[in-house]
Length: 173
Image (cartoon, rainbow, N blue to C red; front, side):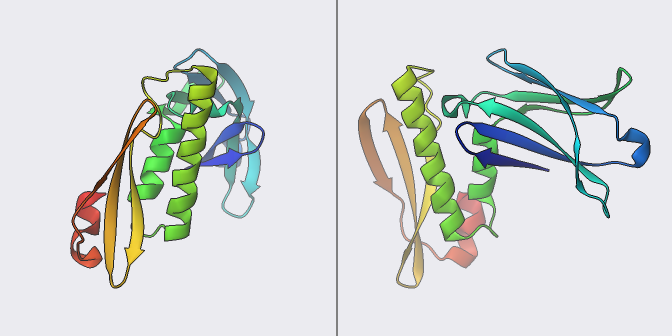
């Protein structure tokens, strides 16, 4: 699994369950913009033998950049996850039916933060992380899905028809 840590910069956390034989494994991270890191795991859960590998110092404007993670022990590849990004993680949270509305609002706000950083830093401003995302708004007994599109500084808001959340939530997200 993976999570994101927000601070001065962002961090991508990868969780790996592995026996003590593999505790010296190292994860090699590479982003699509060329940033690299070699990270030793930290024991996260001793009972379940879960280690966390944290890729630090990811500026907010790089939320859309892909990250390749390769877990190695003595040069042998044990596992890899390629083409993942903070944006992809955020999209998975937005699509998860078990995510609360509060979490989805937080993720939405995080994507706005990333897009603002992209604009401020003139970093891939033609491909903002918030270009398309779904925001859920409660309205009486129904759920309104709002699809936001952003085109530079022009904001267009297109409302989707009101639907029954139980029947159609998964289909739209």
